[in-house]
Amino acid sequence: MFKLGVASMSGSFKSIFVHGVLKGLGEQLQKIDVFAACSSSCIPMAYASCNELEKISLDYWIQCAKFKREGRSMSFVSKWSIKTMMSDLSEMLFDYDNPLLLISVSRVINEQAKLLTQTDQASRLGRKLLLDAAKNIEEWTKENLISEVYSRSDYFGKKYTPENIQDVFYSSSRMLHAWPEAGAIDGQAYIDGCYTEFCPITPLQNINCERVVAILTEPIPVKKNLTSSLPLIGKYMEHKTKIISPDFDLKEIGVDFASVSDDGLRIAFELGLEKGRQIRFDD
Image 1 (cartoon, helix red, strand yellow):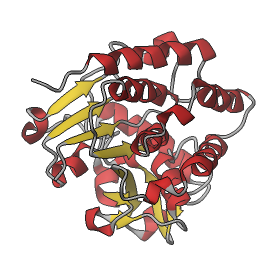
Image 2 (tube, rainbow, N blue to C red):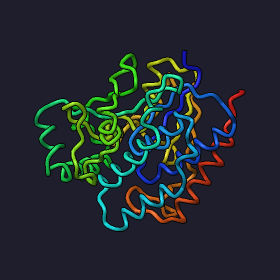
Image 3 (cartoon, rainbow, N blue to C red):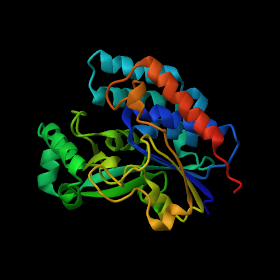
């Protein structure tokens, strides 16, 4: 059913690289059947899935960076981004003539963890998980989270609707240490998809995509999720997957998770654009 799928990694402002890659891929007129997005990469992936990537420009990213420099929270930046996107795409996201868009989220599965993630204790827990990530300590995420996928059809997982879709996009991007506003979908607690899978290749595997392009926001190798020691791509998907990633950490040019320069954004976009143009699908 699905010949080609594109999965994109989380990355906050580094997702400008994903935007560039998607534009480069689009110039080759290659038909993409399904997009699987995580966290901040959901915004450019949503535009691409609706064949409206030209509606989101570099100015969008520059405005997000401006908000951050003004002291706005990442929750504010995320919700402003989602509101902007919905004004462009609210109907097209539910158009079955467009490619399928899957959004990866992490569901919180027990009550104690919900209290930690949905209250003012979230920031402290988020900082702890960043320390766990540096040591590949996985216990908390394994015990308290599961990966889920939302799409316009409940055949592929859970269903996003006009009523909950903004909550789905926000929850997928909510990092505990820097997003103060809690994320919930239909009364259930959720946090950023990267806590369970940095780049949602598994959902594309589950629907039997013949070929996969994985757009990463970090140089390889990349691990499966924030705290995991496992590689992102398992043996089954290695032969099916083309990886597009920056050759160096984008923070070297001024694009980091929560701090960014306008010049860095421009350079990162161009790097992604060139990478996207280089991919070939005839081998």
